[in-house]
Image (cartoon, rainbow, N blue to C red; front, side, top):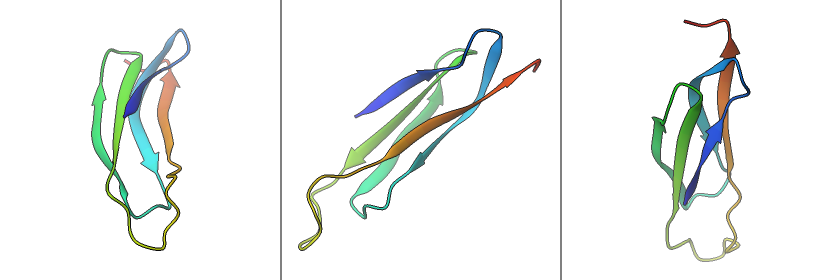
Length: 68
């Protein structure tokens, strides 16, 4: 599971990031797809007893303008 995120026009992607409070979610892929896009992939593992089943995660990218 993951998503390819794109920067606005005339911006370049500098990197991607991931965050989650769940203990069974991990970053499994983070790579540039082009000068303006970045793919962030996550994996949800089996889960821990007593922890809620749904996992919330934040995926994002950092973009900059006038970068060579």
